[in-house]
Image (cartoon, rainbow, N blue to C red; front, side, top):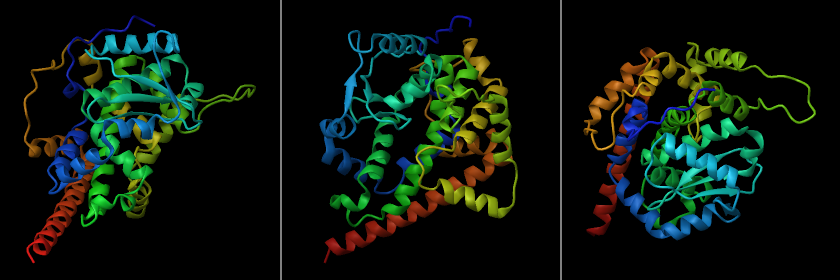
Length: 332
């Protein structure tokens, strides 16, 4: 494989999916959202978050998994990220990784993931998680994971807030944020087959040692296209119900989404050096993000943008009503 191209000073806006930006900005604009963030962050704190996610993990460094540490260094150099977030390996068979934390986000790779993926696939996952940190996703990802692990009902300091719309909006953003991080994973690996191979293995396409069977990435991409093909209303309903509280999109959806980005020419354009640099980004009105989300992939994204608008509209109304009730109660 040719040497990877370093991407000096690349801004996260170069790869962020417009649906991610629209969803995150809408989430931040929800009435009461800042209060929820402050209460959860204040309750757990940076040390508490580390205790939750690092109960059974080792920190990677030159003397601890040095080959993985060297791979991490290569990813940091490719994406030209100036800091080195801590990297941990957690002992669990679950095939997953995460970037979490409030003030100092860190990356956790599960041991099950390292056993499942080869070196180049691991590179793509590390770059994916670094992409989350570069985009400032870690705070909101941590909120979502804490709500999944502990449950909102077990956090009494959130009593009185209308949390269901908030949770739906948060997970809607979380799924769209994965599309951005998948693009960062590809930019860090610069190997489309290895990056797509991660999705294939996440979906069950791993051949166990001693098994002489075979897998096909092309067949998997065909399957991805079939899942996203236009269907009837009942298909859309089932897709919505199946994903409402998922933190990640289905692997086939992620593969199809990344394939479209490659085919759009944006990936090659970035590798040619045509991308925004850090510090040159311009603030964007929320309406522009929604417009981009609607126009980026035509009709399919227009449906997605419509879903965003409806979800966040319901969430905003619910928070407004909850705050009115709380204000009325406090004034009695």
